[in-house]
Image: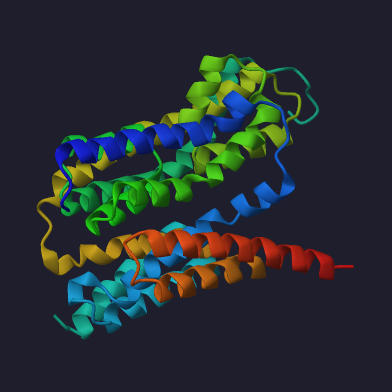
Length: 111
Length: 240
């Protein structure tokens, strides 16, 4: 991380303010006016549109292995997604993913 | 109690909220601890990591911001990626208007600060089930749900920060964040439209990794949102 202390605090302050404004938006400022249906429809997909794209390069080319695909991390990612879809529960998916990661790192030590 | 229409005072609505919010302690504790660990590992100071947790108070966005910062992305891209993760909360905000719209501005402001997945989902379920609740009772219930979760979110982040510096590299902490994101997103893959959006996000992001950090992700997210909306519209039309 190469940011200055001031830059880090700027990120924290702006992110805090921005997040609050998103949460306050309709409840506080816009009031009872209805939102266009197309906007609601697009907003509904934000988590599944942002997070998979953010994670995919980290799964395929982890920095910890110098960008070389790592079987242990790949298997852990697949198990996490499978358990998440199956149980519909993030905590179970995290538990399964982390256990698989450690088990696989122990069985397939590539460093 | 189902036949009674006697309005419970705001105090009992608050305690009902505390009761209904308590199970989420199980979720807040590991998430908050891991954030403390990951933030410390990324190089944030104790104050900065706590600043994130108290001022932003949104798990997925906090992890997203720290991940982008580890990659040394431009400040605008760090903010855009993390705020994009939080955009769903604009929907939460809109959905609360019919229930809490008439409340005083400062109370709506405090609700907005505490409007995260668990408080929102739990509260709206209660409001829908009990249309007779007064606005004051609804506000009290919302704060009740937030009461067990919020202080633990702060405290466990601090625990994670203090424990984080003692954790060796062999624990592969670099991969805890991807696992957490995958775990948060995979339960949301509940329709063809959601799966299509996620696939487009992955394919476009991988295809654009050569662009400056954060740019490819924004394009991928935009393409994925449009894909999701289009597929959903298409599915709706196919239904008789």
